[in-house]
Image (cartoon, rainbow, N blue to C red; front, side, top):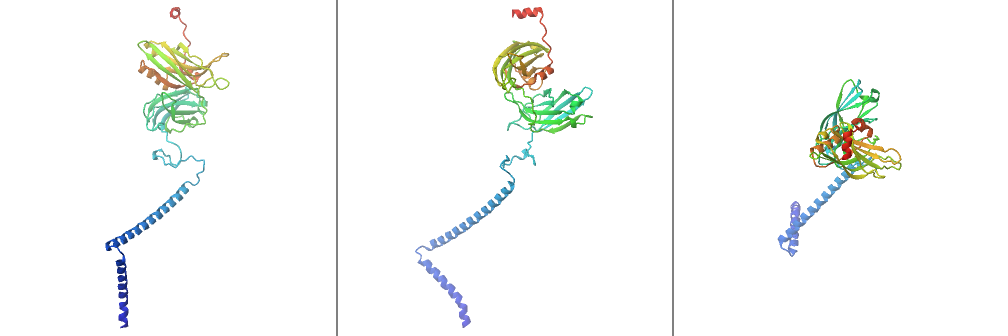
Length: 397
């Protein structure tokens, strides 16, 4: 009897609890379906709160891990660094260095001991860096020898390409003793008609390390221009050319110059420009602008017109020279540049553009060279004395 009574006790208790719960529900003044709806909504609300708490805890753990990772990556970075935390494009990265890709250049070197001549061939360039984002370039190359830098040569300009094929050869007179102490410098520029040309990169070759028993031809990577080289800067000049075949008129308009070399005490100059024509390498006609006092950036805007027959235009060279005026002593040449069929590089391009666009002014900036270099390259003869008939014609004109 005792065992039987003990086994009935849980059932009785459970039944009593269930009856109490039902009595509690009956005591609530709401429909039964509404009561169950409230209980279900409350359960769902509790589950949603628990889920939000879990998500918040996970986010805090991730942020903590990321912060620790960033601290590890930035360890050793001081306040003087210029390193950016923005990841560049993969193509622009040279892993392990900060060097930018500027392209590469195929060149050749050959030395003729008998003639004491160094031949520098500029073959082609590949993958040049575009200095203006979103467009190509108009590249050309400039080559000279250091430390003398007695001559500077330029290739022709190629339009709208980052892979130009130059195939040009330049010759320098260089003794064997100077050869072993010299450096070939090849610079590649992006041409611009109305502004200063932008350098893309340069290549330097120490000639003392070359085996001259055979022609050297190889690819070299272009690098950032060296800052240690103290180049002599003669300044730049801007002028326009216009040729009208039907009237045989060549018009030269000297517009302005900038960054001229200082020739006077006090860091200034009194510049003027001389415009000279040479026919068949002989001095022919010349004119000059007014003098601009105490300035290295003069503005002229002066026009000169010459009579040049169409059969003469192919035999004419135009020499533009900038001089420093001095009332007490001899005037000094600041720099020169010459154009014509005997010119090369940018000078030849300007002349060719003028001939291919008759009756239209063609404007371009040019870097001035030393007077000695232009004189030696052009090799002008003195002006031929006029005959009596020519003197008479000049007098009546």
